[in-house]
Length: 155
Image 1: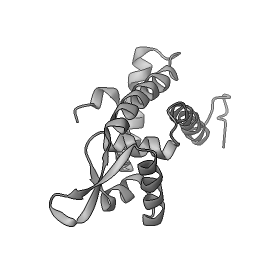
Image 2 (image 1 turned 180 degrees about the horizontal axis):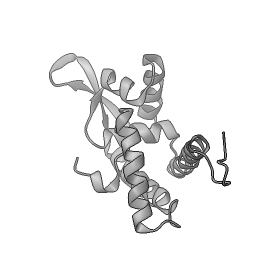
Image 3 (image 1 turned 180 degrees about the vertical axis):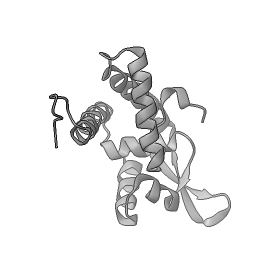
Image 4 (image 1 turned 60 degrees about the horizontal axis):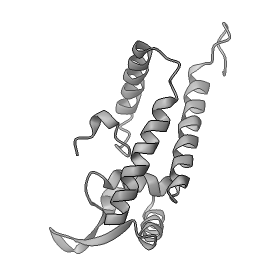
């Protein structure tokens, strides 16, 4: 159901439409930096550290073939490179290039700024409540940390 009896939007419509809103903002920010939304997500994940392909698949919720294609395209664009895994030379890790690091820093800051503007009409208390509730939903469903909040930037 999309609306409650008092005319307010129901939880399903609110969550789906807010996901659409954030996705639209995220995609627009990515386009500004010559990235697809998936490439932006990959670069944001790699801000923390290089990851092996077997780690990235579940984190980005991509099948092996889709992940390989994403990494190939992102590598061709000069944003990432494959490096040998220090623990096992048969494996590779995906790491940001210097160019990728510069782009993702700007993309990340721009995306944070744009998303931060979305709840601008809420009071500080309402924003805190919204963050706490959404954070709980995300934690309950073990959503991978594909995008850190600015205040979580300790990596």
